[in-house]
Image 1: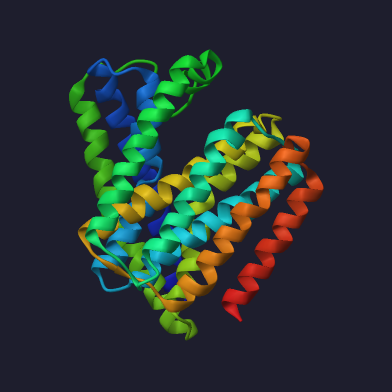
Image 2: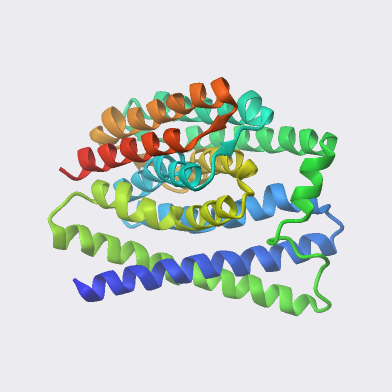
Length: 316
């Protein structure tokens, strides 16, 4: 058991570091090709930070563990809007931007509803994955156009730590970063998924349970740390939009691309319980956003209680 947990943690660390190297190398090459920092931030960085979840889901689906793949995404989305947002709001109330109400929330809810409707037959198939990816591309085009009109948004995007100020002087360095990133993602996913399977076997629980809790929490860890640190520094104004953006990417890109590679059978409990929880939690934050234009400390505590109840229903 100790070896399994150690390998699980090492796999997660290698995944996160691999994703970071991939973003650095790809972003630098994109800037070398004269793409704007705004476009780099909204596409390459967004995809790169979702790379660990993507390779975990693909590896799980291909290796015959679809419950880990689907549980990873659904559990991560629940974790983002309940645990991560809840902790962030408890540390410092999260201000709600108009864009979060007008664009981010409707697309987040729409993506979740689309997922529910497409998996009701018990599978997520190739052509449904194609639909998800097409919708993601349309969404990216829309937010890039919107952000170009918003000077503040553009400035914040250009100030992101993930985006290099300029391309590196040697293209071989960029290619090396990409190679290291890809290797890290490949081997990290092998160790992480293999350990998650062994953990489920050792504990005598379904892979769905491990996917919705351990795997989902592990892949949400970067968002959790980033959001909490930003909130502690009083910079939580973008937290809600970032979390909802992550949820949109999880469904449209991760499940979309994974199902294009391998059809994903959906566990009946994920369909009838977990996706319903995801929909209800997404719906729950709307009145919090509208009424006071902030998610306060009490709201954060409520979200944490809701997440605790959800985890209890999964585990017990």
